[in-house]
Amino acid sequence: MATCDIALERVHALLKIDAGSGSLYNHIVKLARTLAQEKPEEALAQVEALSRRLKEASFRGAEAPEAPEPGLAEVAAEEDRKTCAKGYLELARSPSDITAAPRTLGFVQNFLEDAAMFEWAGVGFGKQESYHMAMSLRALAANTPGLESLRLWGKVLGTEGDYYIAESTFQGAGVPAPMMPEDDVEPRGQGSNRCIYWVKSGQFDPWVRLPHARASQIKAARHMKRMMSGDLAASVVSTPWFPGREEHLLRAQIARITSTCLLAPKNYFEVDEEAPVKNTLRVAEAAMDAFTEELATQAGWCHAAPFLLSTGKSSWPDTEALEGKLTEDQVTEIQAQAEAEPEKALLEGIEADLEELKPEEAEGSPAWSVKRYGDEGVYTAGDGTKSLRVTALRSLIWPGAITVVKGSKYANLYVGSAMKCGTMVGPDKETGLPLRGTNPLMPLAPDDIMDEPADFEEHDEPNPIQDEAESDKGEVDEEEGE
Image (tube, rainbow, N blue to C red; front, side):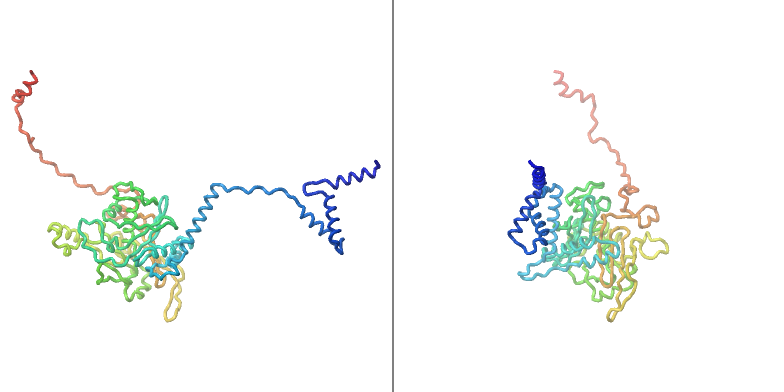
């Protein structure tokens, strides 16, 4: 074999080497065949493009790796995302069917507008959570017939979960029967049960109606300290003993906070004397005149909820309405209790709160702090003026209770652990101890000890003394001797 033949075979073998994407020999053959078939006019100018196209058509790359299977954590996260998206759609859905007859919903306070005011004071849940809460309140109003008004009361923080609280009133409460001294629950629409409260733990959880507040539970809640756990059915283990579960403790704390911290501008409300229910409030005709510069001080505010007495109720039994049902002793006892602890008038100013703890030459009540936020300028708006500043009043004995006002709009909110605190107000002037019933969790001093009981008078034994000699001669001894 000639040398040239050996070289040609080597070149031919080199051209047929396949590295995984085809050999150069096959590529040249395909290129020549394609040129012969297509017969382009400018074959030399198109040979590079044709070669690249043939390479791409015959390319055999490595196989793609198998698609990884999602892990358990990824599957759970995807399910959570789907549940969250479903909840968003349910909240954003219109509360009524466009093809059905329109329904009239109760008044729902716009929490998105309130949240903008609270944000100036450094309190809020964020824009997304505030939107979800506003939509959730709208859905609650749509699904609850007879509801007259609804607002977000606040958020109670717990160790394992939090509670969102909504406050509502219903139409047609009716005329309640007079309250007897032994009654533990005030009628609906009065005192601590003036409003109905709803609770839920998560943003997409259904609203659950809380039970009515009981006087015995309010009294017990005043003598104990306990953080909420986030479970309404949880038992309340405390000393002293609490008569109920966590849902009853939560309702009692809501009643206490509302009684102390629900505020309104002075002259905004007035007592409706014609209403069938006692101490019913209505918006005054000149309510807009209440939004003055005086709201920047404590003198411009008043309590908008009935005061709770030491009995856990807001009023003493009406002895005249219960004439014939009470004994003379009961009437005398009720009158004595009413004189010792008189009922506080509705819409009382907040300047008198904790008057006994007020330092000398101090202005206002030590139970409240007032601060202003935002632009201090006053602008012309039409025939009047307009201010963008926000005034916030904070409770110093119930941390988390706040009232804000901006222009002619105000709102109340509570965000806290539903526990009193006495470290931000002065101590008792006589004892030097913090305000009774406040933090810390354990009391600094025991409660007042009861008086020692009187000694009993000793008496002789009621059975007569028998002669031992005579008792030994009984029949029983004789029978035993036999």
